[in-house]
Image (tube, rainbow, N blue to C red):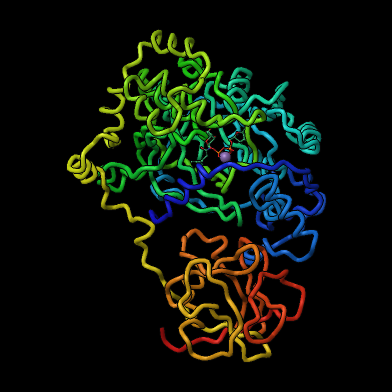
Amino acid sequence: MLSINRSFIYGICFASVTWILSLYLYVQSNTILTNSSLTSLPFENIQSNPIHISKQDLNEIGIIKSKEDKWIRDEGYKTHAFNTLISNRLGLYREIPDTRNVLCENITYPLDLPAASIIICFYNEHFNTLLRTIYSIIDKTPSNLLHEIVLVDDFSDLEDLQKGLKDHIDTHLVDKVKLYRTDRREGLIRARIYGSRRAKGEVLIFLDSHIEVNKGWIEPLLNRIHENKKNVAVPVIDIINADTFIYSSSPLVRGGFNWGLHFKWDNVPKGTFDTKEDFVKPIRSPTMAGGLFAIDKKYFVELGEYDAYMNIWGGENIEISFRIWMCGGHLDLIPCSRVGHVFRQRRPYGDPDGQDTMLYNSLRVAHVWMDDYKKFFLESRKGAESMNYGDISSRITLRKELGCKDFDWYLKNVYPELTLPTDNKERLKKKWAAVEQDKYQPWYARKRNYIAQYQIKLTGTELCMQSEKTSPKKGGTLVLKNCWKNKNQIWAETDKHEMVLSKLLCLQSGKNGPVLYKCHETGGNQEWKYKGEEEIPIFNLAAGTCLGVDKAVENSPVLMKICDQGHWNKWDIVFSKGN
Ligand code: LR7
Ligand code: MN
């Protein structure tokens, strides 16, 4: 349960930002709906043209069958940085696996839990993905606990989104969903403040606009706040793969940060999971990732909402985390509450004025909250010391009025595991010994499970796929060679449908063709599917395309091809006996 590539999540939370805005896709006409979901839909009549697909077909949901499919997918990546072809085909509602610990099912909650306003701000979100966010909430939240969903359109400029969304809400969702639009691009921090001030529920729950909530997600969050108004509760953020939309479970890790003030995931301290029950109890967290949390509305206001002078994106999550802890609140991860989030490799937008808003916002955090420790942040960034960070006087006043504790207290009491850049090696060792948590299985320690071993032969030929170089390296390409029992032609398939060459490197779909790469264990571009043994296409889940060649001759490069077209994209799997 605990095996996941954490550095991957870390990486994708803070991948560098390049951004392109391009035209919005017309998407609604070919939405696909799963059979099973039809029975439980509260909104059956809105699918204009549902195509029914079975569970097995879900594996093939990303297949590119035409130029139009490819166009939708490519434009979607440019505008949204995720696979919109798959998101469209999934439709407005789908089943997802219940990723909770089994013990969660037996927990009962008081009948008088407060109701929540759910606040979702968005800027140029993909229409279908946003609607699925909303429908998953409506489907999985008891209606007495859902006061309303407050949508704040942060001045999106995709026109179809604006009109399409308004029409859709007016026709189908008018009871539960309120749609607002800001008068200019505010950024997610001010957009959330804007939404929260219009919300009427007793509790506020902030969510990103590309999420799906899971079974029983809201009760444990509300209960935590019901126990104490100063508790702030964060769900476990499950992973929706941006390339495949496969939903998978995340391990129980808590929020931390580094001296660059970047959020990171940390193992929980030793001793947190001593008994079975500990896996379902709230876990103290020094920080939150930012996108998903529940807080009492009055408390949010008392605590000073957000810093309204922060721009667009970044840093507000660290700021509110410090503020919660230092000013008398409590922040916990709630293992029984699960919400999936689309983790993408890059942010598809930036600041309209080109500001590095993460840096600007973080400077504000450092100068208001970190006392003398701010020097470590300032030293971590060249030129940060002399950079402008606006007027912080109102936030300093807030800190005084709330009578908050100092940053030294926070570090010693909430996040003692954080090492200082000045810590010497001996101290570090001791610290790590105390922090390391044996029960956590790091992702890289996972033993690979091989389920088969074979050569991959082009149908109708004696040519097999092999690495171009005799000693394959990262980034190495693949070519056809006469079939012979050479280690560079032997593929070992894992239980995660990776194809591993010489039990070393994984076959990964690339822009131009498949390449060999370090196995990253998170599926997607390293996840391959085929049905049967002979004359079959071999399909990559993330790419939506299949292995193929232009010419059936030796040394012909292996490429990624549209699955239905051309002659040379059928293969025979030739199994080796024994492993
Ligand atoms: O100008 C903007 N206006 C907006 O309304 C920019 C963004 N937004 C919306 C956007 O459409 C989305 O719904 O704000 C939401 C968050 O933006 P993302 O999804 O681009 O951010 P992210 O998921 O990359 O970033 C994480 O860190 C941010 C720091 O400012 C926010 O706190 C995000 O909410 C947060 N997301 C999560 O915590 C989900 C888990 C990711 C991790 C780790
Ligand atoms: Mn997000």
